[in-house]
Structure formats: C-alpha cells, structure tokens
Image 1 (cartoon, rainbow, N blue to C red):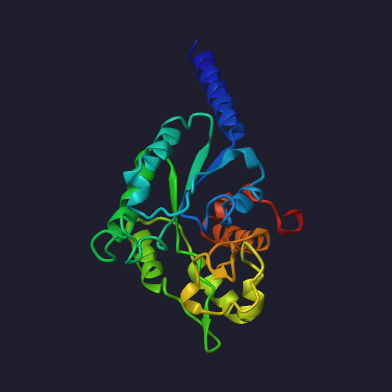
Image 2 (cartoon, rainbow, N blue to C red):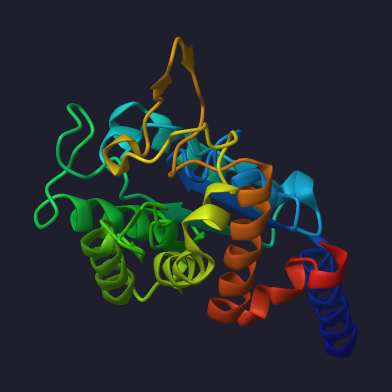
Length: 259
C-alpha cells in the first residue's frame, strides 16, 4: 500500500511539473512614451517575444514614476500579477526618468527623496506578488551639442542602477547602451530614428522633445520619441540587455535572425 501511494505521489508530482513547464512566460512593460505604443520601443520588444500575446505593453506617454501610480495605472499591473496562475513566470520591465525630471508639473519627482523610493517600491511590490521586477535605465535623448550627445538623464540612470542593486533586481543598461550607440552614429543618422522626418531648418537643441512650428505647419519630429526604425533599433538593444541580465529566460525571446 505504501509503495502504491509513493508511486501515485511521484506520478502526480511529475504531472504537475510537466504542467508548469507548459505554462508560458509573460512580460509586462511599465514606463513612459519612450516605451509606449506608437512613440517608443515597447511594441517592437513584444514582437520579439516568442509568444507575443504574452507581452503586455502598459507604458503610457507623459507618465513618471509618481504619476503612473497616482493615476491608478499601477493597480492594473498588480491585478495582472494576482491573476498569474496561467503563467510560469511574469517579468515586469520598469523604465522611468524622462518625466521625473524638473519642470513638469504633476509629474516631476525629487531625484533623491522620491524617484528612487518609487522605483524600489515598484520592485518590492512585483516580488511580493510573485513576479520578477526588471529595472531599465531611461533611453537617451538624441540631441547633440558641438558634436557631443547630451545625456541629461544620467542622474536618473544612476538612481535606477542604485534601486536595482538595493532590491537585487535585474538591471537593463539601456541608457548607457543607447547613449554610446547614438553618440557613435551622429546627429544626422540619429534623426532618422524619430517619429517623422527632420524638417528643413530644424536644429534648435532647445526644441528637442517638443513639437516645433516650421512656417505654418507642425511636425511630429523630435529627438526623444521613436518611429518604426528607432523602435526596432532600440528594441533589439533591450532584448540583448534582457538576455544578458536574465539568462535563464533568454530562450523566451527570438534569436536575432528571426527578429
């Protein structure tokens, strides 16, 4: 009788393990416009997940590490994590910084007392709900001055690195990678990554990240957001960083020759 029970238990455990192995891995993206649909790399990243329907892009333009939660958007992420039984694991990629910078009413956060606290809290709450937080340093802007790319997001990248270390969370070094790549390509090539072609006469660095009036027309061109080319370019960068930082999940993303 004991042998029969042991065999039955063993078979049940094997069946349970096999069932768990069949469950897909899920990705949830949380961030601002540089990750969001139609202006960032998030959808292009999801297209590189083996099972793209298990990648959910919840990034939203204009949001900071503070306003994303204040608007109730983080509650949606928590709800998804609570309903995670259908997935073997859920990775939550979190990138903020652009809208946390000063001068943005209702969005700005203090670099020392708020931004790192927000990022660490996100990481803790993901872990508490059984997910895996993956912090992402903010994508560089693409404005050059005298041939040198300005990196106004360095302090927020540093704070994100510190938050990841504090929470022992995987870190994707998107800021460093994107800065090096854009610096190497120069302003003209970097401008081809934008949402719209660069208008004739465009060149005022102070206009970067804004809609500029050229004559009587407006243009969607800026040096922060991404068109299809830019989204593809930086999504590949995020995929490479993810495979480096989370090697056990590298197989969930398509090889380069399939992207």
